[in-house]
Image 1 (cartoon, rainbow, N blue to C red):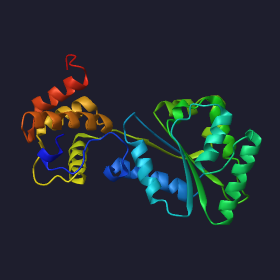
Image 2 (cartoon, rainbow, N blue to C red):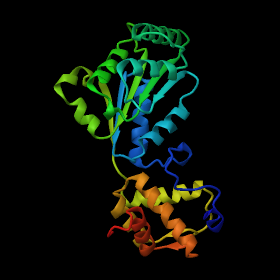
Image 3 (spheres, one colour):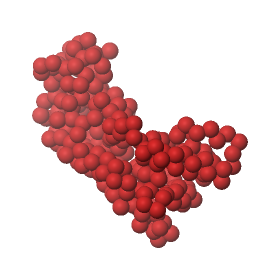
Image 4 (cartoon, one colour):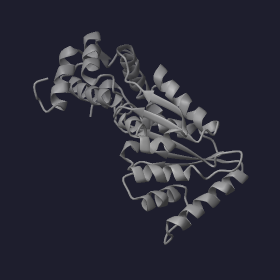
Length: 272
């Protein structure tokens, strides 16, 4: 609705995890490098945690775009399922036909796929998002998948992504066997106030913004940081509402009050 008014080619603050909009703050770059290091060096397990909306999924999709033809990848977005369903979902994501197979046959099919990839010089990567929702039984199944290996290399690299609760889960004594296998870990922290300014400008530029319009004032940026705590998804939500408000009121400069109105709308007008 407001794109033509601001001279934009696409919505800058969509909340979908589009890797084209990936903003590499110092911490996001470090997280990205941890992911690539763990996968390329065949460390077996990589753990990435962060608050809801911190940018983990977008970061993961950006990383997947950088993996070349030497990698076969599978991404599980919703791991709330039984152990047998998880194994079948993994096989399906790798493009394997396991219809009608039980868990043991499915595991054998996955193992043959991994061995074939290794013979072809390919590495195989499994990424599980929202991993804090995995039950203990599912986490044990993931650990068993990591047992698929040769004498000199892991056949499957596994990335566990989740909210901070994932760290707490993995610290439980009954999961110590899995925890000990995770040698690469990174926790993605929220953006600071300077990074929020850079983040907003980056997304506007990717969306085709030229010049100073739209312009978020310093007080506006302070209020965005104060409300969102530096969580990119919340920043997107506030800025999108602010742009709509600016369009409705024919303003290209978005100040403290505009952000306040955007926050009240997001909160259902409940005393913000």
